[in-house]
Image 1 (cartoon, rainbow, N blue to C red):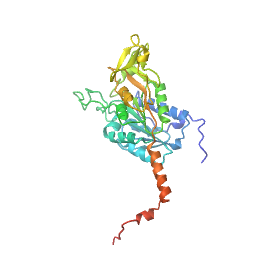
Image 2 (cartoon, helix red, strand yellow; image 1 turned 30 degrees about the vertical axis):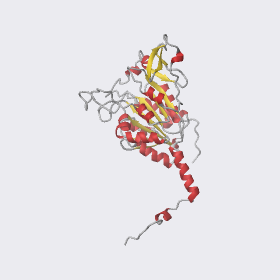
Image 3 (cartoon, rainbow, N blue to C red; image 1 turned 45 degrees about the vertical axis):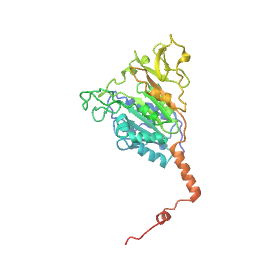
Image 4 (tube, rainbow, N blue to C red; image 1 turned 180 degrees about the horizontal axis):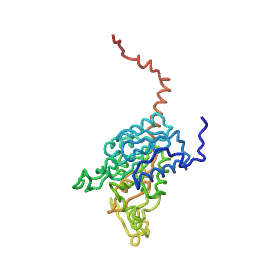
Length: 338
């Protein structure tokens, strides 16, 4: 086999011959194309890249990536991906999931992957609906959402994925929008280079069952008043005229007019803060009460699970010598079965 040469890779190298079977206008198309662009630009070795998915519209993703991949079972993509990463830590392992797949049946796996800081890159497509099964409300659907399974309005309160991730002490958490392709590419590139669990929530439109769920962030006339971009080391300023900011008053964040306060009074975003309390506060900001944050909430370093695991294995080999399966089978109490 000839050595891998990253020069000359293009988006076409990451496409397969499979027809992309998502609805026209679905935000999944944008996420697929932007990730293919990012991997090509970074010169990623396809032979060392694996995509693992669960069940849902988003989980068709491995079929469309010219890399290795697993289309696994509902909610269990992180468990399968952990096995892949621990078996071969040299691989780049991505998990592609949806709001229902990750946060309903898969919620337990999602949390414990984060807790362990396994070196996975988890992209969650959040359209706030079950699209594949034809429009039931999901764990992230707004309170009162009317669907076929909640005709009088959902009485469930939504889960906010970034809040859950930060609450589990994730080392990298970010949010992007499917239609903001430059920012989406930037977030994918950031998470690609992170060691440890990297999580990206993508606000993604389902044109059929939950159209315009994120109109507040996509409408060109109003979006700049409804979102705030998180930039490390910079004050939280937003608005069409860059005339509004976010200030911490007591224990709560509030919107202020820059004409009435100094920029020195605003929160300075620190994605690398060891304490996750401010990142969690930012994750609790939601439209319409507050502008919705986009960007990197948290990016800190902690030893990855697979590195610690390999360290233990190396220490055991150094102390006990090479493994001997036959000796293990015949060690301790044994007996013969007639």
